[in-house]
Amino acid sequence: MKIQSIKIINPFNTATHFYHEICVRLDHFIDIRKGLWRSED
Image (cartoon, rainbow, N blue to C red):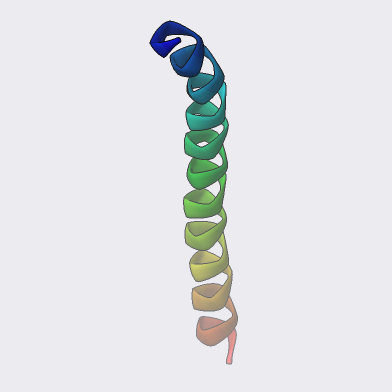
């Protein structure tokens, strides 16, 4: 039973980690864009 639950949870954890990585990179990208907009003004 425990082995099965690990197999079910593992892909979910990887997907969550992958999603988190994308969100962090998007936040950095947005911050860079905001910085560029401010420097132009």
